[in-house]
Length: 379
Image 1 (spheres, rainbow, N blue to C red):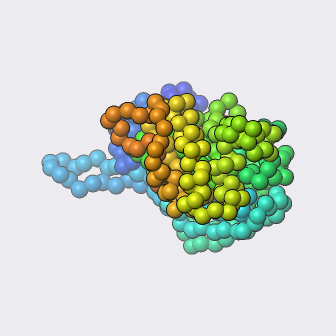
Image 2: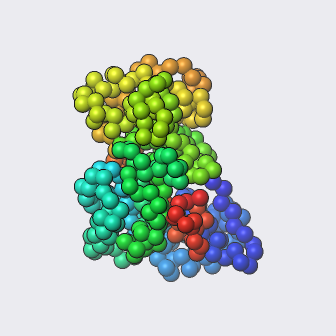
Image 3: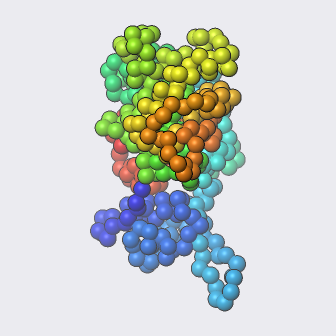
């Protein structure tokens, strides 16, 4: 994503976010390099940097001289300058983590709560955030980000069936999260958060265009294009779990039959009751067809497989041979067609935390000093 400041008088808060994001993404970096990247004057950048230093968000470090003269000081994010609460709500329970500004998980906690109702869920979230606040390092918790299964805002699919949060229809998610946590609140789908976490803290350093296939209780995904998660018109782009996989197959709670997540998901794995090896072999043709569909539609550099599934099960799927022909079959590939996520178990938590950081501190979602939409979903 290209970051550019503005010379308009009213643009100072935006410029502040731009400079902080440039440091977060590119640090250690000099003031002159930031000015060039965001198209602002060095003087403007220096004024903003001074404010950010005083507030503890960034650190200025002078490197050792390598020749004549004193090298300019370089800037980087101060990991301990603030923390955010990342929360992952699933049909199995609730995970929460305290994450610093560099994406490191400082502390984590869990509550087992199968198919939890909203009132109990937000009471547990309040307890989890209070537990995270109790650590000695939490001088400043800036915001909370929560991920939960999508899609959002689809009458026949949202909060219906065993692979999503049944009974959560019409719950004001952002407001309830804000009340429970006492923090500015941001909400997104688990698949988008997983992709965001991978982009910022995983393979995003090597790749700018890839598809994150999220293997959870259900199945979803998100395309990262030019370093940004593609959202779609209503924030549900990538819902591969409801594409048809088997003609006249198993009925799906969405009203259709043969949807992919009826065969490829933790829900499907648990219903079959097979060993990991036997199940992986059984669903391999369906899985391979899904890979081919993603490649032909979106032409990603690679497909990243991650999610709630046990790492050893994800490894078995990634290692499966005999992928069918698609537009991805080409010479000179820098990555395999299918790879395992860098941090399967924590990708959603770190992505939810990154959502909260971005919402409060950066221009990525354009929500600092402004109000998100009524659902709190990043646009």
